[in-house]
Amino acid sequence: MSEENYIGENGLLYCGVCHEPKEPRWENGEAIFGSNRHPCPCRCERERQAKLDQELREINHRLRVAELRRSCFAYPAMYGWSFANASIQTERLEQCRRYAENWSTVSNQNAGLLFWGDVGTGKTYLAACIANALIEQEIPVRMTNLAAVINHGFEDWEAYIHRLCSCPLLILDDLGMERDTKFGLETVYDVIDGRYLSGKPLIVTTNLMLREMQKETDLDKRRIYDRVLTMTTPLFFGRENLRNAGKKEKLALMKTLIAEPERRDYENGHHLV
Image 1 (cartoon, rainbow, N blue to C red):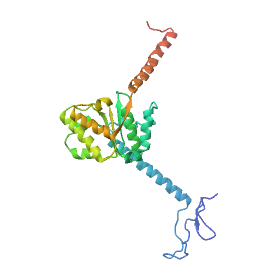
Image 2 (image 1 turned 135 degrees about the horizontal axis):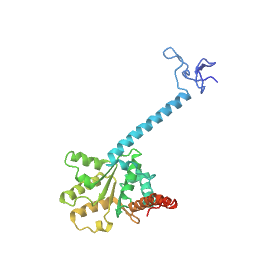
Image 3 (image 1 turned 180 degrees about the horizontal axis):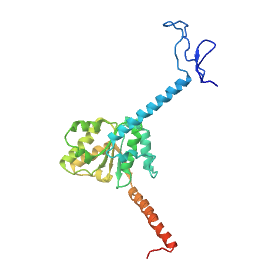
Image 4 (image 1 turned 30 degrees about the horizontal axis):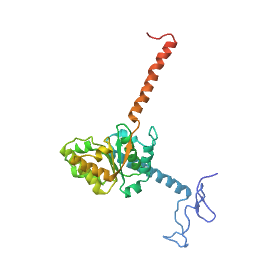
């Protein structure tokens, strides 16, 4: 069957594939600029254009996501930290997934999170998962640690702090690991207080114990912890150290790789004594 355009019995040009008119007449039958018909895309052309538009949107989306990831993370390895790529599924992972999925609600309620617990329990990973989930929605996120904030320097300091405090979500990693100096504590308070005044959500991760934060007697630290506890809901990260779990997997793999050749050599009479 020919796919060439053709002239129909009504004198109009038709598409040879979808058989829709490519130049229908004006509805009122009048002639405009000497013609009573006008060009119009047929179904084939509309579908082709819709596909091109979708491809362009996807390209622009990926470019925007890549730009937001570069702005959010200090380390490219964190670009791939996602709920889908998590090695194990936990209750905390599902809670963090729901937090990201209900971003509109938690954002309007200025609902932040405090991830506290021992080292290696997935706090930083899940915070980055939330960041990446929001970035996929083209929502800007900033993730940094307070040691990096303190070491940023004074050049463009106000603009830097403004970026931290004005983005839709700020994630501060490893609270309590920064330098324990008067200047350091004042800087930390300025950032967290600025975020508090912005009315935007904050996620904080820390190896400090919750009771330690609640019972702090040092005035400078207590101001910081009080602000954080006011802005966030604490989530405890405990049980097995996930980093140790990863080490166990690697150890098991190495035992297999190392022991297997030795077993084969032994069975073949080549065992080395």
